[in-house]
Image 1 (cartoon, rainbow, N blue to C red):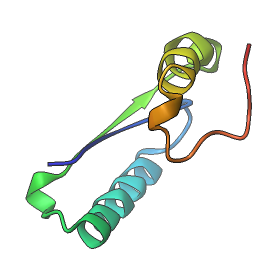
Image 2 (tube, rainbow, N blue to C red):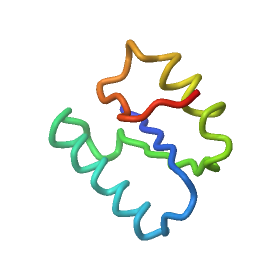
Image 3 (cartoon, rainbow, N blue to C red):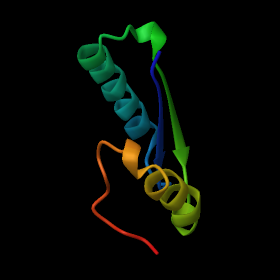
Length: 76
């Protein structure tokens, strides 16, 4: 039962979010063998000013051992 949360800066259209969701669902079905009914996807907009405290420090730096794709940037 995969549940995916995508956090990104505001400004993406609903169409872009829908297309991203469709791609994630399609790839989970293909790569992981999941059924469409078992997959859920959430998209959360996070303001750029809040990114370091809300996402980068707790979820990227704080979970570095769980990341399969690390960002190519660093924040203080």
